[in-house]
Image: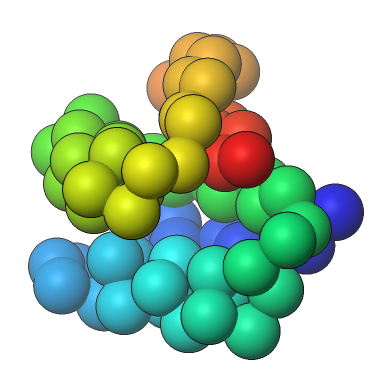
Length: 68
């Protein structure tokens, strides 16, 4: 599983990094680490447009997203 850390990045950089990871590993699951709720919302919206499933889990004050 490929991991992408977008903590501390400003929009649109988190979505761009997730897009690059999907483009390079389209069949592989991604685990994304984020620390802002709006970042999670933007990534989720982007991935849904691509037909990907997104599972979000809050871990303390941060988020982990699994993108399939």
